[in-house]
Amino acid sequence: MARRGLTHLDSHQQPAMVDVGAKEVTRRVAVAEARVRLPPGVARALRAAGHRTRKGPVFDTAIVAGVQAAKRTHELIPFCHPLGIENCQLHIEHRSREIVVRCEVSVHHRTGVEMEALTGAAVAALTIYDMCKAADKRMVIHDITLEHKSKSDPPAVG
Image: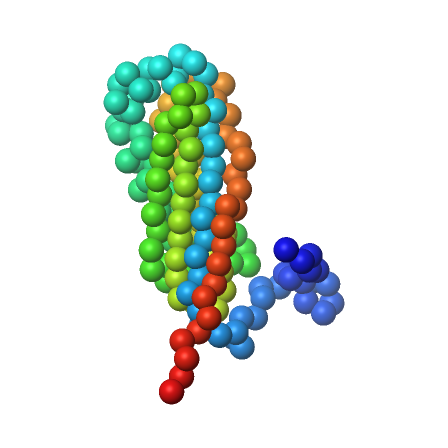
């Protein structure tokens, strides 16, 4: 991927939202991941309890939180455009001592949904931490990464 300059600065080097008004509307997709490393005791207890704590179903709650966060990203990140997200899917997998959260977001718009996918994955991971912290606060949220982004060409006219 070619490196470009910082996009959220205007001609006077002041912070500014990017003007996307002249861009074509295309289908945009982004996938992000976040990982939660668990101490051995928490990993065993969580699996043994069917991924539930006294606060409720951990993964189900994290999925709802992640979707809510993705839809509200523009309220959290100052220069993100408000988007009518068309789809947001979170998948959570418990792998030994690690939980992997994957968030996929899509929209037809003039701007991408990378920040929405990253925010969804991060907030889902934070929710898992919150729901398990009574057992052990030594969990580590790490590797919040953008795994994929794409845009398709606009539909042909005529």
